[in-house]
Image (cartoon, rainbow, N blue to C red; front, side, top):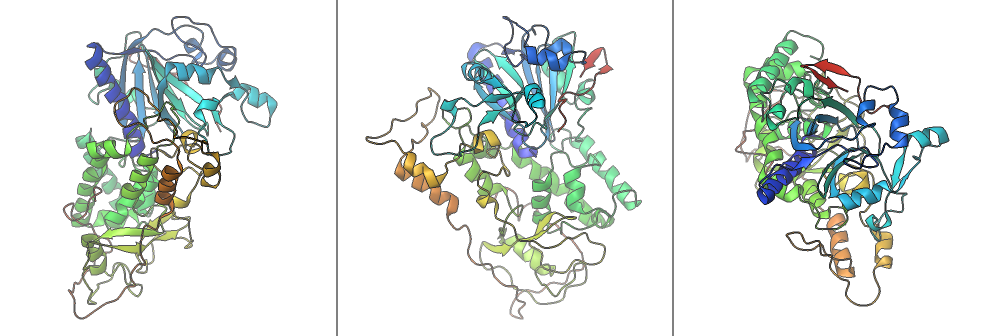
Length: 531
């Protein structure tokens, strides 16, 4: 499921495009939400849209042309809201949904391939619909899988389209229609409409954009855990990833596991233990904003939010994928974790790397400080009921949530199975090179032409044997050496610790080193109708 990093990238791309258009034209770009066959002003109702929408609350959206208006975008946790004209759409992205920027010509080319969906039931397939991926958007030497595109919404402005695609068909949309045009202020946290926009898919306040509301929410969660309200025995990784308390907006399974790793907290720690120690809770709370700040940093956008310089809107983003996998996935779906020296020393001082130690008991053994800048450590994966990843080797005490230990493949070995990161969505991942056949499909004779897009930046490397070898080696090269075995020593620093979990200061470690009805029921508020 897309988490804070992926959604923040989509938000940033649209924000940047709006700013660039304003700089170019000195006007706010106008856009509209079209039906999936065509849009304003040459409107003609689509038969399949009308058939599925008959007598539904959203029928008015597909049986008439929609007026263009200024485009605005906002984000809250794992949800995104885009407004154009009289309509604002809040998106819950489910498992596979993503935002793809393309030209209007490419968009219309895709729509021309409208056909029945892949369902074995012919009646359902006729209703669900899919678009055949145009041949020019299928990269040579890529996956052999059948290529279909499911587009659930799109925002059109001039020659630019932002399309919401979802292979899994689990995206959910809450459409709020207004008698007046939506403004930038309407999508601001201080707006009277802010709560309505996110009412269907609440993820809680964003710790970066709504710090006071977020802080109050987190403190309320702590009070509930100390009072042994429902959830106080729930593991911390489940507490953060499920976000039932609306205190951990933007977190999912990936971020929850990695954040707990950076805080030297076992993912199976019951929530009430983190809340019961004033110092521990404060360190835990203070560490969240700096961690989430990474996903709106220029460095993150410049390394992981880049768009391939290609004429293919579904080109696989090799650079973004490599950067994200290498820098921003710590223990989640990893075999080994790169542990900075300061964090390694914290784990050692608490006895968390000693398999004979019990988490939470006083640790008096001598331990050796890390004598390198980092160490590679094996990651233990606990299957459900925990579904958590950790480098902790000490024994969890009674009351901790655990599960059977299982071997897993490292995330770099996932192939065409969608995983984590802004490049890991089915439509573009299918265009990753299949090296078992990519070499055989190289163009014969002469040097291949570079692809020129008239965009700023270096053209994308053409498919050559040398470039394929470089890409292949980056994918399969060993990323670690053998991890050290735990050893206590009398010739090293010593520490006594009794806390069951701990946090490292931000100075030492930071992130830098099928429901067929896809639209919700109608609601009414402030004279705005929402579906």
